[in-house]
Structures are given as structure tokens and as C-alpha cells.
Image (cartoon, rainbow, N blue to C red; front, side, top):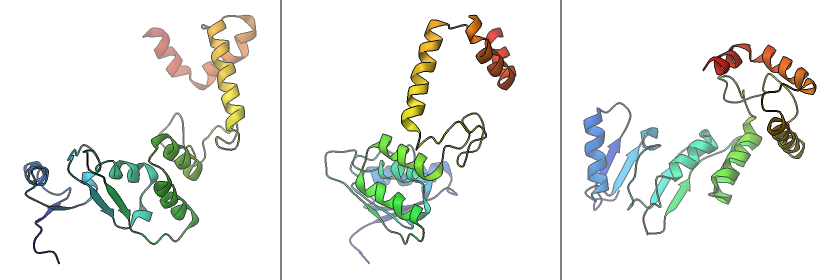
Amino acid sequence: MFPEFKVGLLHGRMKPEEKDEVMDRFRGGELHVLVSTLVIEVGVDVPNATVMMIEHAERFGLAQLHQLRGRIGRGAAKSTCILLGEPQTEEAQRRLQVMCETTDGFRIAEDDLRLRGPGEFFGTRQHGMPELMIGNVVEDYDLLRLARKEAFAWIREDPTLSRPESEPIRRALGKRFHDTLRLIEVG
């Protein structure tokens, strides 16, 4: 299509030496276009890369899209990220909308939390509803923030939870996190 441009290919099944060679050629300007799988997502720093096109962008999560977009625009030149996709769900449409509205990683993480849910705070599940329901992390944000502030104030006042009024908290924590608390006390 563009015979004046040299195109490189990068994917996860390549040997590390092959990947390094392609990246060196791209970084050095010998390759003008790099077609890549998600292997490009982390750890690639090519300051002169200015355009990224992500096909099927609706299939990716916000964090992944943010990581990918972060591979360009590291130099002085203006950069552009093109998201191609055909979102079929409201959630997919919202993810692409967020990526078009902001480059703020905190805002992206907040919207990702709203869309996917928090998952487990102490576990391995990365999305969905948590085991312990104390409120809706998104809808009850102000209340949870106040509870957090109060909890930190309590710990500042009674860091070892040794006061009589801290007994119910100490008991609940001991029951829920018995092994972890024991490790902390020993360590």
C-alpha cells in the first residue's frame, strides 16, 4: 500500500533476539511502521513514535488501552492514537468514550472501577463483585471516603487496637485475617 515505507512485525512468538532487532530497527528509524501484537504494551520506549492505531479497540480494557496509548507521544512531536472498533455493548462504547475524553490515568482507573467493579481486595479475582459487601464502591464513594478517614484517625489514636473500645475491631480482624495478622506480629 505504501511502498516508500518499511514495515516491521513484532509478536510474542518471536525469539527475544528477533524482538530486540525489530525494536532497534524501529527505534533507529530504519523501519517506519511497526505492526505488533500486545507484546508492545509494556516496556517499549521509542520517543519518535507518534501514531498508534489499535484495531478492535472495544476488546481491550481501559488499563490496557491506556498502556498502549502510552507507547507513543514520548518525544517532542505531537502524537495521535486511533481507536478502531465496533463496540456492541454500552460498556464497550463507554470504554472507548473514556479513552477519547481523557489521558488522566486516575480518571481512567476510576471509570474502569465503575465499569468492571472492584473485584477482590484480598484475593485473585480482578473484576466483579467483592465477597464482603460494605457498600457500593462507586455510589457510596463519599461515605466510604469518610469511613476511611475515620478508620485512619482511630488507628492514629490506638495503633495497636489495645483500648477496650477497639476490642470488637481487633476480634473481627483476627477472625478474618488470622494468618496474615500472625505473620505481621511475628515478622
